[in-house]
Image (cartoon, rainbow, N blue to C red; front, top):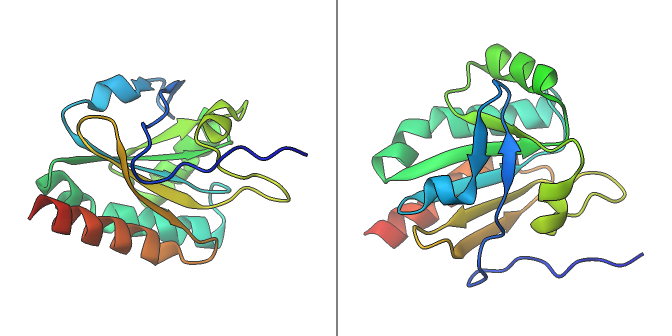
Length: 153
């Protein structure tokens, strides 16, 4: 088994072109000129993933206030994402990665199970922050916001 090189701060963010839970198309270019928080999570409506999604939702206004968009991404289909979005009343979009193309492009490990990783991309498309932690749901949002706040200060 060959593992892809992990994305690190200072790397160019990999481009993407995928649909969200409502059929909207998203690409990295859509976020040029703004910060972007992109978090990968294992599975819709699982307890830890719900905590993580809700943590980003609770801090969503803070991210927006700092000029940062938020997107979540996992391997479930639009229908599953829509259930999660409605159940958690999410104000940001969930990207559908059924084929795993985003996970591969961003080198997010999925063996033996999908990983939980968060990336913060600057307005020029450069990754500035990476956080990996499978069980630390709340910390993904907290640490990304703390980094963004410091970077924008």
